[in-house]
Image (cartoon, rainbow, N blue to C red; front, side, top):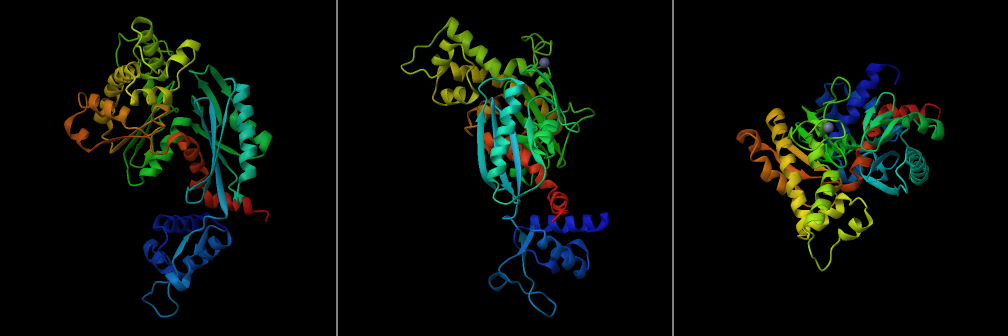
Length: 408
Ligand SMILES: [Zn+2]
């Protein structure tokens, strides 16, 4: 592949084979992409040599072609040669995953930080990556995808600010390169989850992912393309105002969605209720956290609410009111097909939060855009960020395989 045109054509052919699943022949590709049979055959030979494409079992699965000669042999993506690694940081834990070229998860790993400091954050990222790289069952696409907390400069590979953690200017990609000699592509962790969930739904063009944790961010995909904004701020729905008389947010303003509906708010609401009106329950899963003064994780609150814990349920209802306003506005503004609620409250994939939110959204969304929208909890759970991060190198597989095989 010597020139850009050839590279683009080969990439188009690879995409065509990938999209077809396991049922497209060289002749069908030539017809679909309006290319000559020779061009397709040459490119497919290159792709097979690179370990990206393989022929199906010809004897069993051959399909006849219109022309004379041997039957067309269906082609498919080869999934046992090249792998992508992704990492993403959620609930004080690094999650790692290895994906094959069809985005199938072949390995998972997680490491919980003993303390939430930038030093631990970097130390455990490198430790986890070293471990995962050893587990790679084949060759690695030479680019690691990493989902990070806070506002990210994706070009520089830096966390600019993570307000809820109090971290600033952490040059993650540079550190990974220095320590592991591997380039990294970084993105906000919620955007990484959004990417994984978006890929899961495949045929949806207008998609919104709402990541709810200590911060709240929306990742918006319109016409199949992510909305980034002029300087990375698109999707900062956590700092849109849902009640000007509401509590003060970390950003200084009052009544931001984040101050009304984040995990911090849930924790505050639960503490206030226990202070003024403590429930008496035979078994209380929240009480040990409250006694120790610990932050109650989202998955614990959700489990409690699903088991009819009155305080957890009331607190979830309360934040659903603000989420309903924000999501109603999003529906009226963007007319999406699918909205996915993510973050630790939805790691169990339970429908409770989406049910509560849907009830509130009906009060604010216009009838027609609401009639077409589906609201779901995250389908991929706690590893969605790592899966989404690993999907970034997968999108560039041909370019990365060429780079990796340059010196073979
Ligand atoms: Zn704010």
